Length: 250
Image (cartoon, rainbow, N blue to C red; front, side, top):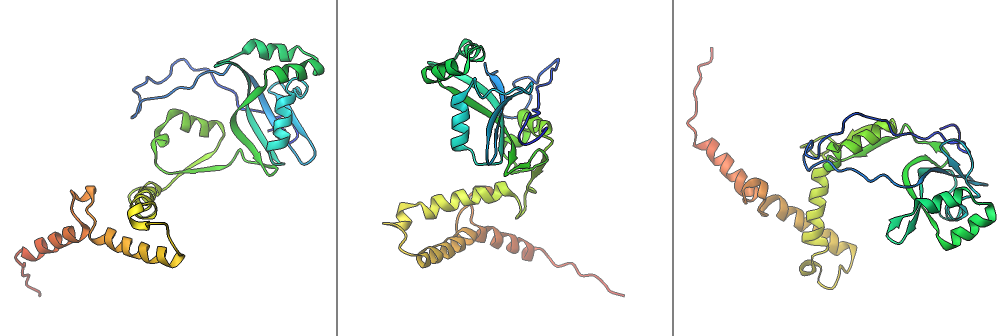
């Protein structure tokens, strides 16, 4: 990025001879449509709002509607990368964009009232005035972890991919799976909460009882529909049923 105020250097698509087949990855490989729009970087500072083309020219006069929306909705210090598009019914209207580009400021305002533009945001380039191109992106090991576009986008942004370790208490995916069960089986369960939780004390007692039930008596699919207590009992019974091996010490 050349600077917070602009012009803004944006990441551009790179040509490739081949693309992965739809079945190249588990869960198939999705592809996005090519937007019929104009690349725009939206810059919001304490005092100014600006729209920059990828060639480094200002587009404030051509898209007064986007300029006003950015000034109203974005906090100072934010820079967005995206494309300006104009909808006509349920389709994108590229000719309407061309009309904007060749119009005077007054004509562009009239066209904006007739057919407002929208911004398809691709990326956040700055937050609170700080360049976030070196941002560390942390994620759990969900389906996006193996997605071509996900890993490719991180590479384009030069972001460091960070994921939780798998199969232990630091595994985000496992934690989120448990939280989902916890909320469904207790917090949002009408049979448990009745007319609603009456106090924090009621919730704390219910959580303690749920954790005790979950860790000892609840059946788990991962344990072949057995409870942890049953599995532990079977484990220790099998160990003690084995004959002891005597060894001679010297």
